[in-house]
Image 1 (cartoon, rainbow, N blue to C red):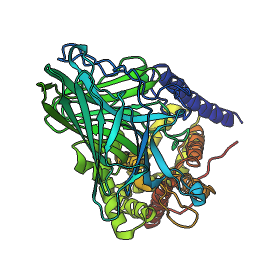
Image 2: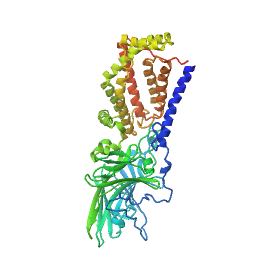
Image 3: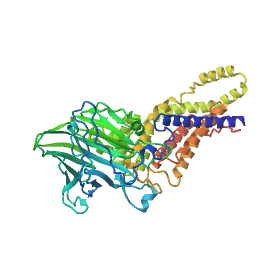
Image 4: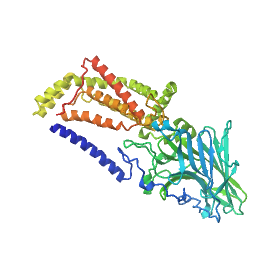
Length: 571
């Protein structure tokens, strides 16, 4: 009875440490490690009804820049705001006449619902939005030199091409669609935005054309930014969390994620001056990003504006003589994190699909998973075959570990007898145990090292399955119609728990009764989390467990070790 109490206390103690660590992480402004909250952050609530969306001032260049922040131009009688809907085969975009802001983006090939909800209806996923409750928009404009007014993302603009009274659509057989927005003169400066869309593409080619209709020279700097609230994606559970927030990439600074909490406290650290790279807003499976051409000087910035968060780039200065026109090009990407597509768009852009610190292992695993999917045409079976290939690659390493476990299992009765006989003589017990290990040529730790070597590979595969948008609404068999959602009937988690119990029973019990009980309790506690995990991740663990059981049973048989379950005595 005392042993059971000690076991329970050990489990409670372990969970207490986990909870304390999570609270410490939150206290330091970091996300919780084990049980991150999926509830909205208080500091990131959407603006109230009636508050103008995107109410961010023009971004301010750092001290020493040639330009200073421009002012939002005042207009005596601003024209009524209009919204223009544009459709291609993959996107439905909504442009606001205020600054020609991209105020809405629906991904027509990705459903808002997942799992069982998708059977009821298909609603395209809304990524960018500005509806009074949520704000996530893409903006651009100009910063005037020395505080001179210039067209910004708050300046009214009108659509001058194409002429349309309703939704604008990419017609059948049409490969390219161009929109042209133009502002009225602001202190003699006119901003014309040319936005080109391509069939099958999530990329918007944006050209800022600046015309100086005034009588004096003008200097401006173009900027592009993404503005959003701090609400996280809804595809998380209490047991795992993915990053949501701004990200900056440059060759010098590499991929740098910026936590909302760091912007709250004004302590975000990232590469501010660069000649390459991009800025992005990242969430689970999807993202948006502004890309300037390689070699163009830019100043990256990220900041909190009221209760919203902005990340953007300020381009190089443009000098315009009276009557002159200057252009500045950029690309806006709004869509899913499809790794192969992102690799072709810009260096490092595939990093928005966040594999964490095991990227070096995760990328080749994804490549192999994609190749297998190309052969079998089903992501569930691709997961099964990938785990089989990995287990085959580690077969001899695993065999060494399982042989060591089999030897330990064979001498386990002698160890238990020895422990009972010498329980009052711990020093002599230790000596005789070491003598037995030498005689039987058994290394008690021989089963650990080969398994530890494989852990990074399986953690990397875990992140591949968690981060890949291809798993979203991907069916496997029968009732599993979405590998990115939990099993609706909990069949896979129950099978996972069963295989974990069998695998644990095949291992030799530690001589210490308390350790033996903990060895059984911890896998069972760990299995509880899998009831909330995506089905694809649970499938991966089941296949790994089944193959481990099969290999361990085979090695035990070849070594003449009886196949029996080792159960601790709970008393």
